[in-house]
Image (cartoon, rainbow, N blue to C red; front, side, top):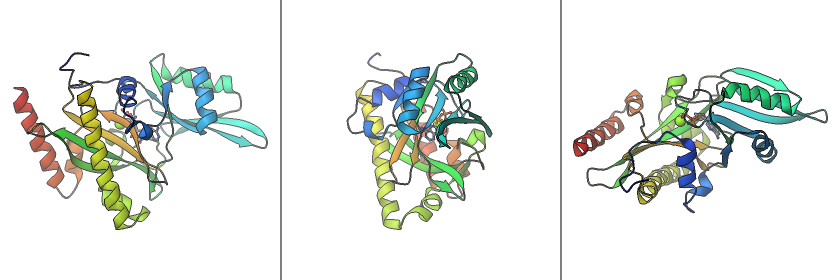
Length: 256
Ligand SMILES: Nc1ncnc2c1ncn2[C@@H]1O[C@H](COP(=O)(O)OP(=O)(O)O)[C@@H](O)[C@H]1O
Ligand SMILES: [Mg+2]
């Protein structure tokens, strides 16, 4: 990669591998490997539940959730794609069925995070990080996204509902814990921005997808380099939306 880098990067594999080099950030990245028979076996043994997704995907398209279970002494395999669920008892048949879904595209397997739920729907968070007009990485917005009932992805373009963070967090923790978590997310976003910068990737804006499990660990699910700012316009309070858009305009001017 050149010294100026490039402002966007689609490969989730490369973006993950770079972040793994940071000893501060890497503990928050769910283990990620390439899709294949042996990796699938090992990851399921290790985690019981994994997400399988295109290396270069968007909008939650092609994302699957696979898990193993034991039922009356034997292992059961199942996966969900969209709202369809498939169950199998034979690992090879299971692997072949998943492989067919990938249609020979490059796919990744990632440790599955058991996402917190809001009214029985999974949710995750989007942390928006932008280079400020002064050239400093700054977290400019945070929003939650609630999956459609029964769905495994929270993406707006997949029916996910943008929701304020406070509304989603309050049922799970008191206000002191919320404040601490929000502070931690803000710093995490900026740490990620600075680290990529140090590695000479010329990103200017990042949208970090963060999943919370019951321990409230902020797991980094993926980092988007061309994040949608308009999701923030879905909130009643327009202050974040205005800030995100003003930083965006400043970045555009700088480029010109
Ligand atoms: N490892 C994971 N654990 C839990 N949920 C995940 C995981 N990976 C993806 N998801 C869910 O699927 C959504 C889409 O996955 P993501 O990796 O962000 O790909 P995309 O580029 O399609 O947005 C995430 O926002 C999250 O809701
Ligand atoms: Mg995403």
